[in-house]
Image 1: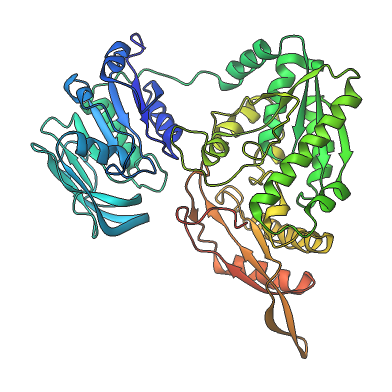
Image 2 (image 1 turned 180 degrees about the vertical axis):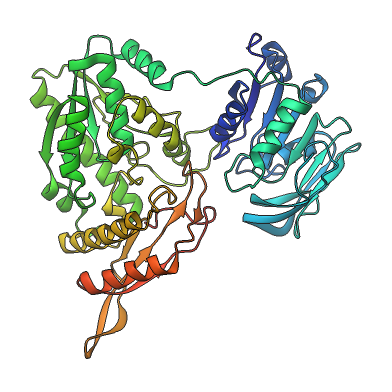
Length: 516
């Protein structure tokens, strides 16, 4: 660390801590994530060029809330606070943080002082991404307030040098218009960090790691049909070659045509050994009459593992398959409570949904990566663009996009509606603009409609087009009306028992991308 003179990103349990580290690296400055328990002495030993305090789910005044060692601010190292980190910084330096009764979530209009150090050269009016309930109500002595919103009078502050500064919003998030410019300005121009770091080849790094972990042992990889598991498998294939056998469990919860694509395109591009298991009935039986989304996730995770265990016994008699490869990404980890103090949003089937008696050692080469990085790695490894650029798809598949119990008839219905939506978005040239468009079946809801000469009570279908780059935050996509019209008309005309199509226009936060 002393040689790189990089940035310590202090993790207060933020959903976005890895994203902050990435943004720092995008500014060509080395970054390293450290826990909030780090002391001033430990910081001093690392000799960083700067420190960034992350956001987090706690209230600074709550009992047992994580705090920052106040001695850190006397080390002469520049410090930048974000959201909770901003509040923790204010509290440590003698400011006041309060529950004001006003919250801000999502895109927020902000007025900044262009004459300030951290906002130099930026517009006075800009949109930023907020996610907070508490607020700094008194800035520390010697600090100047340099940004405000309608509900937050102190949305940013800085000392005279700008080296101690912070913002209430999230500059690391794509939806903060000038977020990266703010971070880069502070890192390079104010904190004087060396902007000389370049990204090492992620693929080569992960291949080397996997080779060291697996050695000469046998390994299986569960292909889900999505880009994550495909890239994870390609990495392991490069690392250990024919020691890898991929297992594709056709659970009947995939989108139209995806099972065939895995069997054809993935094998052709990688030359991997592939075993296909037809488990449609197994999964349907296990999900019968289950409506709770968390239970669905756990059931699907369990049945995946049981399928892999059965495959392993067939692949290697005697049970010498020791490793299971999964395409778990960083957002899966943090949303399942895998960060320091991170709030648990869901039990991801890859993380919180695995059975306690798992017989394999997990290998997760993508665990610290985001979707855009995974796609980059996939292209480097020569995977077909049809797989690399496929819209993200949840591991539990259509099982959680059916709000209600899962049946074959409901799966068939949703699969057809989804295929229509994807086809029309592709024809409109929106594939790369839209992160994904979940199509959701409100299975236990009936909506009155008129079709032909009679009244119908059909299912509503929800379209959830969103823009994102990492799945940690998302905004709803402004799909042209004419495209929405085509999708709606085709679904209600072509899909049996659907008489209403609705559009979800909620950002994340507060809504998640998937409905469940």
